[in-house]
Length: 100
Image 1 (spheres, rainbow, N blue to C red):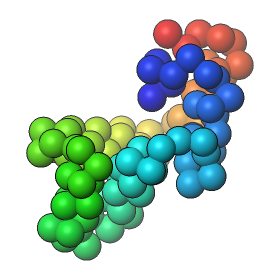
Image 2: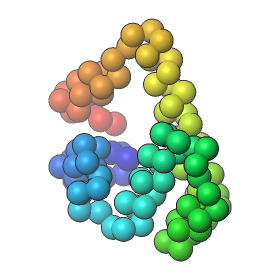
Image 3: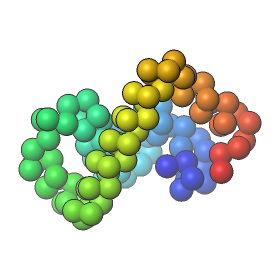
Image 4: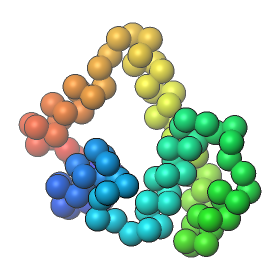
């Protein structure tokens, strides 16, 4: 996400609390969906997908969202198992300016 944003403040606002960030409703809906997939994928219903389609998301985009969420869940489990603090690692990258 940060790679696509030139406004670092906005990127941080989205990362810390997307619900109150200055982003469009479609992006907020997509992020809410990503949270739901992360926390309770088994509760996803066709209406959740239809809501995103109403914002213009294609089935391919919906698949990509779920795929990315799944990948990050996978990476986080590996990091947790080995005691790697990803937040510290990412914060160091943000602070050093090596965000590329």
